[in-house]
Length: 287
Image (cartoon, rainbow, N blue to C red; front, side, top):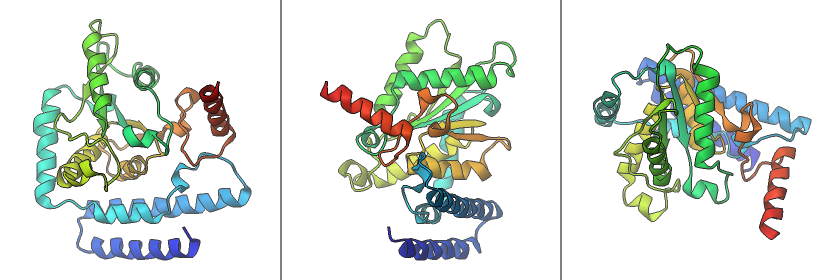
């Protein structure tokens, strides 16, 4: 997008957010301001990297900063919708886990389906489960009281992800997997991130409700890890900065994980690591 046009759109969206915040609650004002501050910092960091000729993961620079400012303005649920969202989470989801403790909880938002076709590489479900187990071992096991089972808060638009995860839990009769699966059974699992898709448009209100529930669920855990090739996950991490249920919450992009096994390359990323992965995949395909 033209830099001047992007700047003008960002200014317009920022004004809309500030105007709306005049009648918003104190918490909503804090959320919007924090996210706008991060947008400005991210944009400045992108310009600095560009000037230095840095070749790195560009997941937060793929879309102009306008996108998050606009989404923050648009994702303002009506009070009735807020009530329904809170009721579903408290009465139908968390009530099934009376011992749920956010201090020993891992958030795992997963974008699958069409995200994996061109925009992003995607981890296998076995790798995701390894990630969850290693996260528990590295971050929580030494702090949790003996016998504590943690929670894996899983949200996704991909029904196959949920079915696999459930099967993993059922077959894990030895309880060697240290986490209980927390998810929204009433999610519509629309199978796409594209609003113009037929199965999305036909159930737009249900999809939006499921999306808001997913956001609120991912605000619960103290730690969350996601694919920042997804603009939705990047937005989610913006929100976690200021309205997470835990003051010391951590949000980590797979692209920045300390173990390169879990790195995911965006379709537009040009780095030594991602260029090497793409070349390897091409060789595998043609051999």
